[in-house]
Amino acid sequence: MTTPHDRVAFGAHVFPFAGMYSSGGGFPPLPLLPISVRAPSGRWSRPFNAVLDTGSTRCLLHPRLARDLGFSSDGPAEEMRGAGGPFKAVPAKCDVAVRDAQFPEVTCWEISGIPFGIPTGEAGLEISVVGWDLLHLFDVAVSHRNGRIELRLADER
Image (cartoon, rainbow, N blue to C red):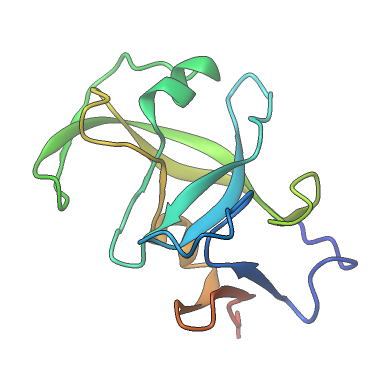
């Protein structure tokens, strides 16, 4: 993992609850985290918002984005369960860059080899999801009332 010291103060960074490019018309119903992912080909995606889901064990990548980045949907799919019911997903690993919401060209953290599931159908997933496969690296504080998400590198003692 790499951490640029000029953007992350004392291992922590605060994000607006609404992610990047939020409209001033109130909060969305879910907290959004700006990220980019890198495919096996080594090309970073454009920054996008993913749902920060503290109730999800897994990270999920929207199938259309996965296809555009060159991830293969071939291979054995595993059964996954979620609020939308059971679905199948192909396992993949990718690098993740957590981006600054105000300046998405700035990387707060870059993490290699995070497991993601790529659902085999688009119907069940409207937006990519960041779960504990990535979040276990951080102490996470989410405040809808204050309109913020705080990520702090977890103490590795």
